[in-house]
Image (cartoon, rainbow, N blue to C red):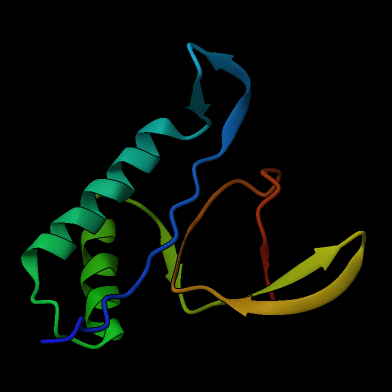
Length: 107
């Protein structure tokens, strides 16, 4: 059997400017841990043969149960040196503060 499509959820830890013992400290350590746990619960709880939206539905449900606010399939503008260089549709985006340097939703 070939490898069935398994969706990739991008979890990007945000490092602080400090390094301790060669390990990056996470800006949102607790939140990142919860999101990773939800991902593995879904990954281990479902078959590997479903289309991507099934995994997204399961992730959204478990994230909401954990009290984690997030959005799905929103489009975000991508800027480079104040130039709009494109837009990207994200599978799942965990809500964060507005001053964190992360992409903004296109409205």
